[in-house]
Length: 517
Image (tube, rainbow, N blue to C red; front, side):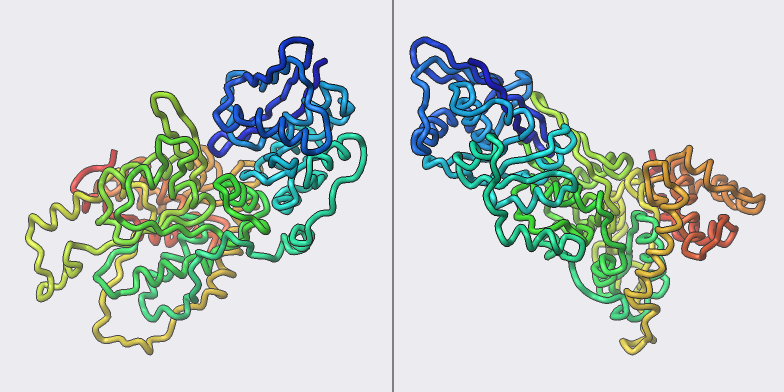
């Protein structure tokens, strides 16, 4: 007798629909699992047999063949246990097969028949909804993750017997109290994913008004920014306050962020509200930054998706590590290809970096800088022209010898956040239907459609081209920044002063010692 059940397997950050086909027929007793299963799935034979017997059901002493389709997709993890066990029961006539067609099953089985949760529940719930299956049966410990997906019925099954009851048309087990509470606070809770976001207010930054303005512009348009200056001028302090002026995640963005952390095994109590803020140490490798060859090994750029990647002491990072950022900064994704494995991860983030102008940090101050010309050249070569060409804004922070900590702040985080929110609302309204919501993600076609320059603006751009200050990519980035400045000023059109401000903030790629490519 043949029975089919439905479940999902996790491959890196993707979920794949798996049809479990179980055939039970006369022959020598045996249990074979085929369909490119890994060791954890192959070991399910012993767990399933023992769990069925300890749950009070009969394990058929016949020839059992389980096929995991499609056969060319690698099946990994113990989350397929529940679907395999229910398919065996249906194929042996102990469970009606009709219920298996409308319910997806996901969970690991204990030897006593209890259902244990598996990582990636949120992604599986999302995939279940997209597959057109209205119900997902899983363990109660992570049922709260599945309840975050609208329009999906979650059936809690704490035991194999509970799954049989649900598939026979009966009710599931009670939803755990933590899950019910999580449902009520989805829209307001910050969840467990925002605990590493630094807290601080922009009003604590005294002086450096031009840098504060640059950070507000970067936040409003999700532009990449570089802060440069001597030690102690407030670069790191300013960067750590960027999360306080960013708007909260939209629901679709929150699901993407929460899904990534769920797939990596993090406990999820509610949808993330704060945007991710990742700040890796400068000793990180290229594999740690963008991802490695091992399956499921994601880098910091993926964990920063829809958020901020902050690289402090940028010139101290290995050059090969920084060069690995080129594709994510340009395409919003990272593609990792190895001999037997290739994968594409989402990596749409805002790059925020801070660096000293020279190895000792005091370039420009003749009395304090002790760097030789060789030291300066070596320092500049750490930051290549192509990488700097992908940075939209450069703010040079200087040491104010006449000022003090009593200098009034330019604005508070609340004031800046209001300005950023209004600017992003204008961008989202203008770009509706384009698949992007911020100016930094506009392509060349969108730039031509939404940015009209007058004669004076064209002359300014031509002058920058003649001086060799702009590459073709750099020109596009200047236009995006100018559009953001206009949005902050509530201007419908990009004016000469908006474009002039954008050009003034453009990094000088000549400092890298090479031309942008």
